[in-house]
Structures are given as C-alpha cells and as structure tokens.
Image 1 (cartoon, rainbow, N blue to C red):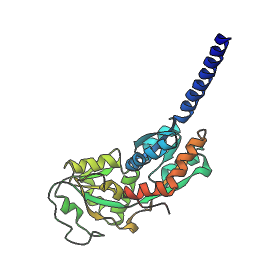
Image 2: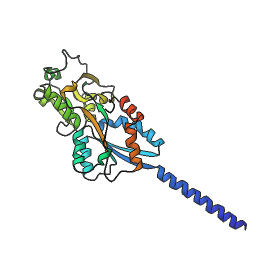
Image 3: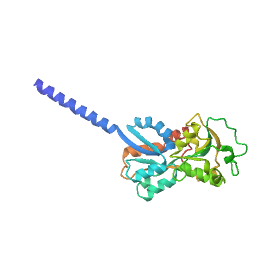
Image 4: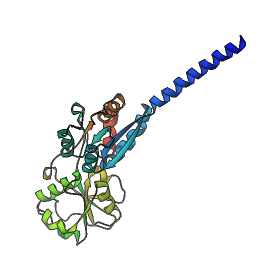
Amino acid sequence: MKSRRISRLFLGFMAVLALAISSDVRADETVTIFAAASTQPVLEALTPLLKQRAITLNAVHAGSSTLARQIEHGAPADIYISANVRWMDHLTDRGVIVYDSKHTVATNQLVLIAGPKPFATPLMAFGPGYPLDTVLQGERLAIADPDHVPAGIYGREALGTMKMWAKVQNNLAPTRDVTSALMLVARGEARLGIVYASDAQRSDKVSVFAPFPQRSHSPITYPAAIIRGHDRPAVRTVMDLLTSPEGQAAFMAAGFEGAP
C-alpha cells in the first residue's frame, strides 16, 4: 500500500516536472530579426522587455541590402527591418514577406559628422554651394556603400542635390554599412562621414558637423515586416512592440524620430 502511494507520488512529481520543463521550452522561444545596422541600439534596449514576455531576441545587423539578399536566399529571419523602402519593396515584389504585417517603425535624419581631430565649424551655411571638397583638405569622406546601402544611397542623393557629389568622389571611403562609416570617423581614419542622426549618438568621439537639408534627399523611413512562413504569435509580439509606446520610446532615445 505504502509502495503504491510512493509510486503515485513519484509519478505525480514526474508529471509536474515534465509540465514545468515543457513550459520552459515554450517560454524560451527565439525570434530572429534581420535589421539595418543603425537599429542596433534600439533592439538592444528592447531585448530585456521581450525577455519579460518570454521571448529571446536574436538580432542580426548589417546593411539593409545585404540582409535582404540573405533573406531572399533563405536565411532564417522572422522579421526584417530595412533602412529604406527600396529593399523592403525588393522582398515584397518577390513574395518574401507577409504583406499585411508591413509597417514603418521609425524615421531618421542624415548628418555630416566630424571625428576627434580639431575641426572648425562651417564657415557658411551647409547647403548647395558649400565647399565640402575644400573643407576635407584632401582627406577622406566616409560613406556607406552608395550603390547598395541605404545610408550611402541617401548620402549620394543629398550630395548630388547640393552639387557636391562630383567634387568629392575621389575622397570617398565607402564602407559595408553605416556603422562602419561611423567607426572610420571615430578612429580618425576619415575626416568627415555621412551617417544618420541616431548614429552620431553612438560614439562620444564624433560630433555633428552639419545636418543635411531634409529636402536634399528622400525621406528616411524604416519599414519592418514578417517573413513569409514565419508568422506566429511570438513574432507578432515583437512586431507589436516596435510600434508600441515602449518601442517608440526606445527609437527616440536612440536618436531616431518616431513612426509617422
């Protein structure tokens, strides 16, 4: 009789333990997000909030073009955040994303930054006709790949609008993403650099030399979407957080502007 009671207690204990273990497995769900390099501080800030919701965030950061191509070729992303509409449209046209999940989660501004070397403030208003080539003094201008990476595409557009592109082409130091452009300037390896306003907050070794006029380039928006075949409750929770008051506060604290 006693042995049967012990057996029942043991079996009950094992059932509770199995339930607890299965609950832990469900609670440890991972959501992988492929996001533009400039969003790294935001996702780092949101990671603890998602942990409270029983979600582990696996963030992969790089240039939007690189990430879009990886997703197109089957990389295991659940969510994609691009730094411009072009690469999101690229995936949309190929049927890679869940269309009704697409939302703009933030906006940004483009700025010209200077590094740790002493640098005079602009001698005239930064705009069309500004002698940027002269100000560089033969040194380099860091810019994310202007053919593929959104920050570089915006930069080339702005410099073209302001009639500076042809004058500084020989001074360009193209990088794989905007974070790399930031680091070139922070290390003093480039005299000036073109990054987002949010990136300028990421290093105390750089300062904003001048903001680009907003009319000099296309609006800088960050669309996010769920990858087709990856739509599940945990992924929706992450998407909802990006546009929630908590998510928008994280974007603002990192130097972005809120979603329109």
